[in-house]
Image (tube, rainbow, N blue to C red):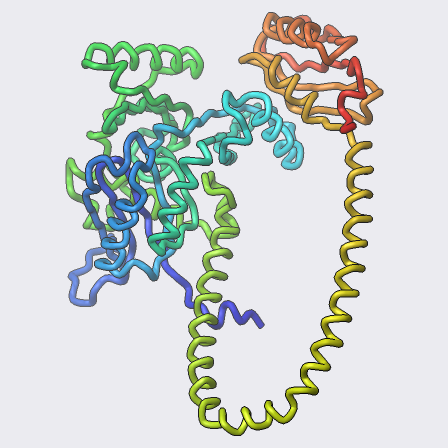
Length: 480
């Protein structure tokens, strides 16, 4: 029997958009019986909440004043009675790096995960250890699988999670505005759209096709001071994407975007020109349509959505047990006060016996601790011996990472030992880039005997390759 399910009620989902100027929230509740329902009217009504944020609380998606933001959130949650909800939060994309990677369709699920990990190690222009990184399969094409990888600074996310904890908000997932918008924006089928979204201090140009993310770029308004500069930037992006996708791209201003017709069953969203305001918060809410165990969409939290759900349920359970314990403790304190005098007289008469027993227990406890310390010392020496004989592969991986150039994808890294031949395989955009990558490896101070067998000479693009090499000095990989 799962006591956690018995003692904690299922909570509903709340979609929340946070940006530099405003907090918007959306959730569903049963429609009142006296509402005149139509054929296409949902049995639920969607509740929309909007609250301005004090100026300077958040700047370019980064929290500046955590105390003030927490106070604002607490006021909203208390007033609207939102503490019963689990929350999916959508934050500005200003500081989120997102990119689409293509992998051969022949790669199975296990190898795809390894390929994505290698792409994260070798392809992202950020330090992995400083970022929270998430990925999801976005589209399956005829010859490839497309995967979206997103990364954001740990410092930024930690500030958000600290504020949510301080405000008593139960967060299941945290994603970018664009991720939320992809679920709700109305687009022409099978046509790529280039969307311009103006933020407080930046402009985001992003591309979607069939509501699937393809590309994004956020530009500070410092670099696009007037409409002419913005048009030039959009044209550059548009021409590049049209060349890559080999199709004409339609332009769309975010302020003119509409919500999908499938959500017209909620009359609250049929507000004409201003409906674009709710694309993000409603998009975060719609993430609820997948069960927690099936939600493999990107979350920028340190843990997955399923893990976050279990964590929040456990936290609720612990809070309940704590409250029950407090009530029981108060009861026993009140009861024990009535018999305190009787217990006190018994304790005095047996005081000497207790002292003797305590002395004996202390002696036994000291002996046990000495044995524990000896065991720990033995384990520490054993661990040190193991580490000294374990190669630090990260040195070689970081070296290869420093030699990778744009256009080179590494899909596998194979090494049986530091003294044997090591190989990497992957896909190169062109043969010129492949040769340049090989030359970079040959210049390495750590690698030797770099070999690139020439195959598929007739293939001009997306060339599969296999490069082998040895480590010049295997001893450098060991702790001494």
